[in-house]
Length: 346
Image 1 (cartoon, rainbow, N blue to C red):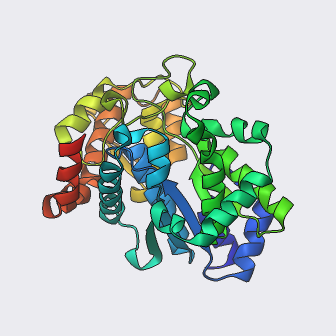
Image 2: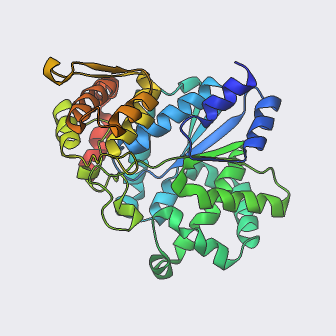
């Protein structure tokens, strides 16, 4: 695989890379670079969180990256996830490992690391203090929204002000070339890059993928209402939902005659086509017969030109997504321990 092919695969379906020139240089210099993504163990995994990230991890691995998945247990504790019960959070971390293995990430090129393992290193806290010392309170406050929190909440719990420095420190302690996350984590990555400049440390490249829209539509202006959320089962599809659950959720989903903010089209673009490279639409002959798409761009063109009805699209998406999740359901049938323990705790 040449440089341009490697670069294209890394950038596939991303919102942003900071910077592309740095990424090109990295791929020129290293056959086997490293990347990381962090996850708060905070509940059941949905397809927006899981399948989008799993696909990008697999793309990174195909171009030679080793990927470190940080199970951010103490970060979840600070963020009051799972009732702040650290034992339940750790069980959820083991469940997240199961999810990624079930979704096909290369175990040989993946390292799962709990944040508590990093924090046991004496050097971690020295790094964290250097990060905090290098930034103003105002800069840290601007980054608090990476937690899905606002400053009013942080004012009531001072531990939340530590969170951005912890997330930047994770990147340095892991020693990775690329920090990968959803676009909602951009401020943490920019904090790390700016801190690296100040301290003369290696600066991580930042890679960001989009956040999938809620099945319920855009909701209020609050961005938390616009995205899939595990706290609202009607807004998302969980990776172990059964075929009937998936069909019901997709049938009820918001699906306007446009692409922006359309969760059904987003699942086609970021989940189905990267995995399947095609989508088949079954229709009666009286409505023109079956359709077959080999690319998302073809699908988008037909949808926007209203040659494809939302109901037909939904039926195809529900069936295809259900088939794609069969290996996940099979994995958890064979390995139910962490999933069942987590469900019993939440």
